[in-house]
Amino acid sequence: MSEAHPPGTYPAVVVGSGPGGLQASYSLSRLGIEHAVLSSDPAPGGMFRSFPFFQRLITWTKPFAPAERGSRAYGRYDWNSLVADEPAHAAPVWELMDGTSYFPSRAEMEGAMVAFAERAGVAVRYGCTWEATRREDDGGFTVVTTDGEYRCRVVVFAVGMTEAWTPPVPGLDACPHYVETAAPKAYEGKDVFIVGKRNSGFELADGLLASARRIVLGSPRPARLSVIAHSTAAARARYLQPYEDHVLGGGTLVLDAAIERVERTGSGYRVVAKGTTIPHDWTFDVDHVIAATGFATPMRDLPDLGVATFYQGGRLPAQTPYWESTTVPGIYFGGSITQGSIGLKKYGVPSNSSAVHGFRYNARVMAEHIARTHFGIQPTRRRLEAGALVPLLLSEMAGAPELWNQQSYLCRVVTASPEAGLTDEGILPLADFVDAPGRDAVGVTLETDDTGDIHPALYLRRDGTVTEQVLPGNPLLDFETAEHRAQLAAAVSWLTG
Image 1 (cartoon, rainbow, N blue to C red):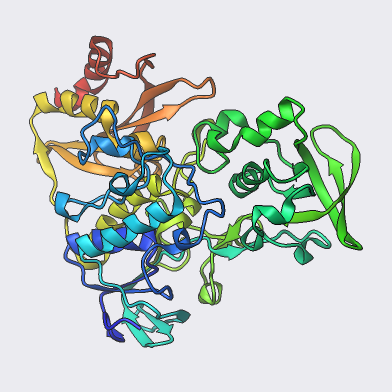
Image 2: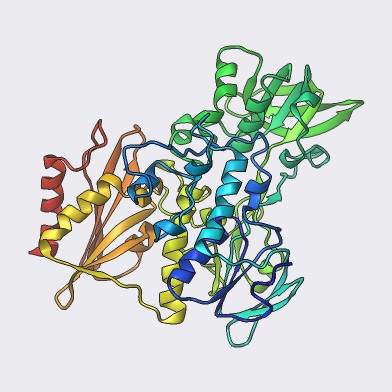
């Protein structure tokens, strides 16, 4: 047990010491909001203390990139480090990487989380397990833990999607889940059926290609490669070797099939499935079945407090654009759980909130929202001269990591009013900008359309009506050209005129 944050009353409580909890705590501290951080783990790192099973992440950190290391723009090329306002607080993952890959190892990622907590001074009460939650008459909450009770006005649950989840397929619950996967040697020369075709499914298949005799990956929906290329919500290119093995006839099969039941057959299993994209009845007799079917948020008693959930029986809490429970104000979510705030999902591409390079920016925006909404702390906003508007937006289009990593999800906003003139509002959720009323404003984001073209998009709010204007893409991803400048200046001229 850590000596930090003894039980008592705090303005806010953060539950979790993975990257989501660490980033949320850091962001709250920078705004002067006192809070306690509680974690059942013995040290920072969250799931990175144990996973991914085959040790190599699917998100990149490029030690050398077109942007200067340590700069804000470098975050576009470093998807794994937490973000800090002061260079001395940062603990970039590249410092720990051995140079063999730009995908860091699990151990390197865990080490970076430990270093960030130390450098940034994120104090955590370790070995303190969240057990229950009460809603008090004054609108606050009591977080019940193994160390005692914590009273607070706001609580942020950054506990990850850490509960192994298995769909209600007859017999599948008796099969090992991803978290119970054995060492590769146990599958040597064996036939393996992996239920699931997303991150964990392709990761296991990739890791077992050199061991298993035959691998079958099965799930109802096809692997959408156009979405995979732009999202961490599905397996990225680093895990597509099993798909290549399937295409080239190497022994791996990637099937669109609904699993109807799994039966034990002596020392093995029988998987009965029905084809989806191509109707067919399939039966597979295999040596091993692994349920790579994902994870759920550990909700404990939050649904009893009224916290609404959704997605396959409640795997995620329903959230506002600011990652607050839609049904219980004052309860927020951090880290990978923020994928429950869906956003616009343009062209079918989800946010990157399931990964560090997305939710680290969510945490900053959420902390400012908590400060403003619950504690009356107004973050400093910069006034702009009219001539500074177009250069600012061009610069954001060209290199803002928040916009590149959270396309069509986060946007840079500038508002305008006769009294205040132009005000740089910083990074905000695009869904809130589009749906919520407000002053005349422009929001800029980036997006990738269904042809794979990456381009800036402007959202213009004028007299309460929001319109969208797409700016052209560029083969060199250069959005500071004369053409972009001219189109942008024309689009926002009414704000400065």
